[in-house]
Image 1 (cartoon, rainbow, N blue to C red):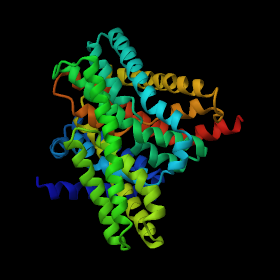
Image 2: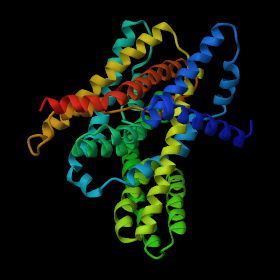
Image 3: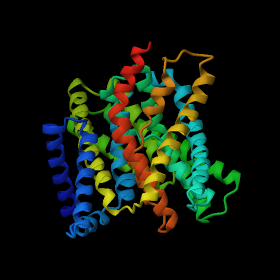
Image 4: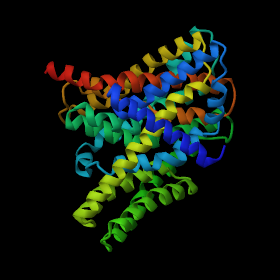
Length: 412
């Protein structure tokens, strides 16, 4: 199948699902299209069980979509930039300690808590998975997904301070999580002999290097924007920043996600205020909002359809449900620690830990990282439980986070 045909099919399916959701389900677009695609996938599987071989065609199409490549080296740069573009830098700066600690320390802590508990639970069920692979699962499932979080929190009615914390954390911790995943993956598959110094050096190179690169490319683009007053040219410059900047960051072996987020924050704050006319701001906001909505919808349709190529069994289903509990517990512990420490120095909204725990959604990044693992029994097990956690996170947590916020608000 040609690339254009594949894109045409995905866009057509997404448009139909978005239409059905808008007319009948009335769910948030991302959740609605993923729910419909999941239902369609399950229906196809049931037809297969009834003797109708329909799934093979769908599977062939999905196997041509490299989910890891599509998201991590394609959609992610656009979605992260669109999310960062509307985040107020002053609001982030006021909460830099809690956001920084949750994006780094909490992610690292969660990785080890999840890895250890999953290793223990798997042993109880007679499923063999080395501890290093359990840590690998912890690394890919710990970061909250900015794509899932940003699209849902806007409609959830969270207190402003909490929304900023969750949004800020999710924009940065995926970059940290990807670096952790790269390090643990290298250890697990014996690609390199990593010492503690090498791991720290790689971490700093990826994370700090990505942030500095984002500042440099963001400043260059800001300078160019300030010298023109033509919204077509200025939108093209932001597109060049997202695509060219992300590609160059990956080529330099630094964190593309962190680079794009930092550049997006610079353009969304200093660029919008000092380098754009009102007309440009209006067109730029409309353009990136549209890009964000369309790509989000396509991504979540893909997540729903991926169930067709993932292996499941009753034992894996039970393991997946237990993994959901493990991930939520690890999220609660890893968020509680920095909040309790920082409460001595600043005030937090009541029930912050509960909302931060339930609002820590997982999404496409976790699925993409799991799919990027080399073929083998470890990959099949990790992918299956990852998918359970992501589906629960988006459908259950995503649909109920607004109700959790309402409930906790009434308890004040």
